[in-house]
Length: 244
Ligand SMILES: *[C@@H]1O[C@H](CO)[C@@H](O)[C@H](O)[C@H]1NC(C)=O
Ligand SMILES: *[C@@H]1O[C@H](CO)[C@@H](O)[C@H](O)[C@H]1NC(C)=O
Image 1 (cartoon, rainbow, N blue to C red):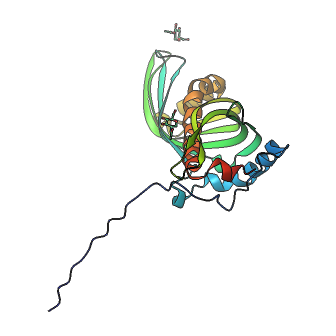
Image 2: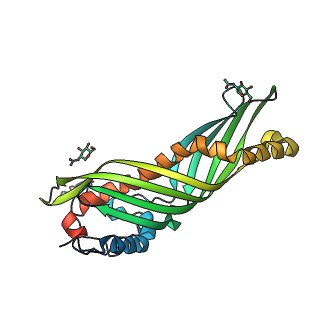
């Protein structure tokens, strides 16, 4: 008599803690007098692949980056309130790295990148324009042309589970400039005339709006990038990234 026993195998999802450099990243010698040039070249070559994510390394894709909600008031809280929901930021995979500097003494990484971002989202508009109450919602889009991002990261040396030295990013800050922003809210109040007027207003005020939404957007984007970088640095040791 046969007795069939079925074993349910539960896949244990464990974080990969030690891996070699992926094929798309070339190591630079830490003694190379032109280390930053080497690193910049590598970064330029690998950023596209890196931004696509890598399931085997537990790196989610960075294109798009999702931001749940962004709220703005025009010109202030007594006026119009626009909530942009379900924001998908597309474009990081086309990011152009302009500069990259490692400072092993101060333990900092500084990077500069230029990117064009397109956001597909939904809007929820309410409030008043010239005392007229308005309420509308629908699809919308935002374009940020030539966003220049300057990011600085601080790291410390930690001993990984492989017994080797790894970099742990402890904090980061980001500064940005945007050449131009474009906004488009579809089907505003079901009235093309009013819709065009509000869209024109938004596009006239683009600088102010970017000042309002910029910090949220930048923090979301840089956090997504730094998070992936952190996971990556847990897997790859300093020795492997920058051999002697
Ligand atoms: C909001 O903006 C309106 C229109 O520019 C202005 O009259 C009002 O004083 C502002 N209110 C606040 C609280 O800033
Ligand atoms: C890495 O840095 C973060 C933030 O400072 C800290 O919470 C974490 O414990 C550090 N990781 C290790 C392995 O030391």
